[in-house]
Amino acid sequence: MEFIDDLVTIYDLVTHAKKGGKRVGVVPTMGALHDGHLSLVRNAKQHCDFVVVTIFVNPTQFGEGEDLNQYPRPIENDLELLRKLDVDVAFCPKNSEMYPDGFSTYVQPPRISRPLEGTFRKSHFQGVATIVLKLFHLVPADEAFFGQKDYQQTLVVRRMVEDLNVPIKTVVCPIHREADGLAMSSRNVYLNDKNRSRATIINHILCEIESKIFNGDLEFEKLVTEGRAKLAEQVDSIDYLQIVDSETLLMPNSDTSKVVALAAVHIGGTRLIDNRIISLP
Ligand code: AMP
Image (cartoon, rainbow, N blue to C red; front, top):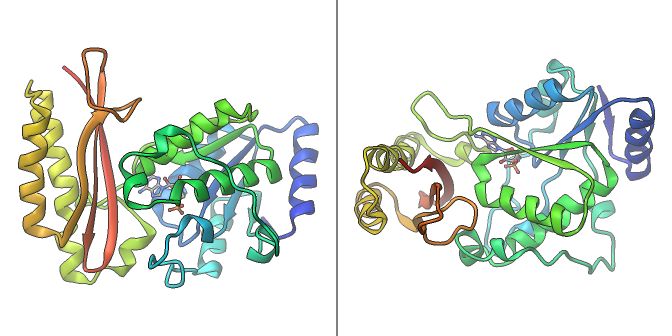
């Protein structure tokens, strides 16, 4: 595996691989890799001949008072995990090269970025859209792999790729969970034992909503009210628990065939998100 931090070198390597007939996959991450990230890498290895994993803790997607400085950065361990999976390149650009002095151009993210996360993390998706587009320019891959874990992010990226004619196919991979159902996240390391066990309520509530819908209960407002009340017993605060159309993130209507139940909560100072896509019966 090659370790590359230089912007020109990565571009040359990827374009060279493509000219040689290789199908290139990219997996953008912020590092602190866990099995969720690695499932994306495995997926990329299955679809592509040349896989680049990017590791970059992107400052512009963190808001004031968020965990940019504490965000875990176990780079040696990350590289070891990627070596074991036989990844071709780990691309770990420097902050000073991605955001040099005078940097002031940002992608205005699509409308789908506004509800849910957009309400609670104001410039988050502007930062995400900007870094993803920059990475797509530096690593002009054929396919890019994202996790359903960040559901709204997948919609934002897909819309941006379409709107800005980016020649890359986005692939969304399922959520990888711990044995007790908690969605894997680099932020789970912040949880002490007590908070770690409280956190299982998130998936529990989403599963309960899923099974009720599966059994024909389509009173979404009631489901959400009940779910919020149960969540509130375990978590410190709830940013949102919503059931929305999986394409538009608006209230489900007669055209809706799939909904997504999404939650964002705070437990012991850690913000956790999760979701489940649910086909309507
Ligand atoms: P992050 O490092 O948190 O920015 O995540 C990098 C990519 O990994 C994003 O596309 C995430 O959605 C994805 N990801 C994070 N956690 C999981 C998980 N538990 N299962 C599947 N994909 C995940």
